[in-house]
Image 1: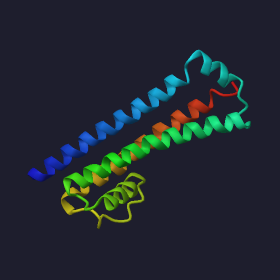
Image 2 (image 1 turned 30 degrees about the vertical axis):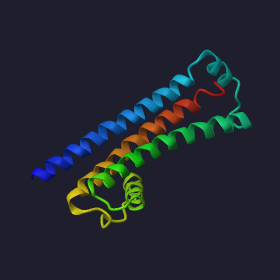
Image 3 (image 1 turned 180 degrees about the vertical axis):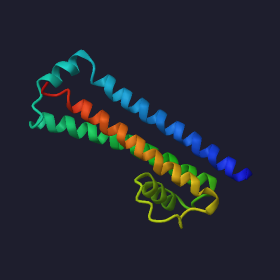
Image 4 (image 1 turned 90 degrees about the vertical axis):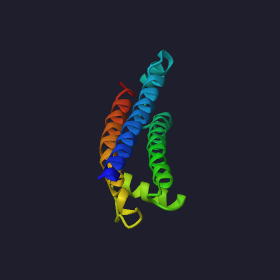
Length: 143
């Protein structure tokens, strides 16, 4: 029971940390797009032009970077808690958990399986948040 409380505590801290990382990242992207210069440039972009494609690509890469930071954060927790042995295995397990592919939990010690489940649940929320943000940003071009 004592380990369950520890696992739940670590999982909760990771959820809060990743939500903060994601929120700060999206807030920063949004703020960068709200400057007067950026707003004026966005109004003149044809979504199907090379500039429109570069804007879209930039948004996608920035959001992928945020998700990558979150995957690495969980991987490091798996590694440092001893939940998964080895950096490559920790990163692999974090990636399949985050993406909800979750082949199986054979990579993680049984005492830490709940942490992997929390990561999968968190991804659903962060993906939805990113998707909403992405469409909001795309709505700013060719307005």
